[in-house]
Length: 120
Image (cartoon, rainbow, N blue to C red; front, side, top):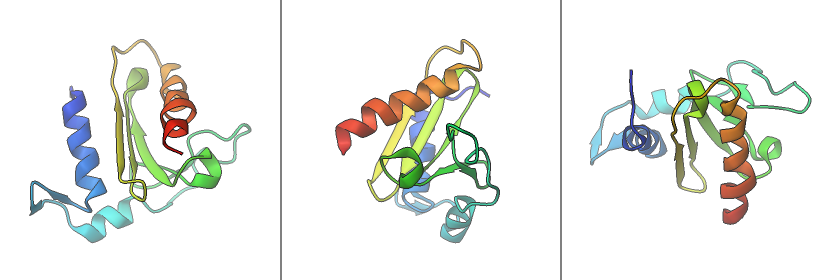
């Protein structure tokens, strides 16, 4: 499946607005809330801690973990990245040509060291 930045942003907005997109309830709001709750400790226990805990196909990263804000995110091969920070009313999409698995941490660092730092 190929998703463009606009497609990822639309998914992010759908979740940011608890299942509502274009004025229509496309996903059940309770499903959205349940899907971004911690279900597994994920990689939060690694040193240094990376990514966060895991929900239903979302990484959950609390402010105490990332130093910026409570958020959840998804990433794909090569550093494709979709982040949703509900309290900040923020959706961030990074999309680039896939170059390898190591790019996921690079995208993560760009968001939390540069974008988030500019918002705090």
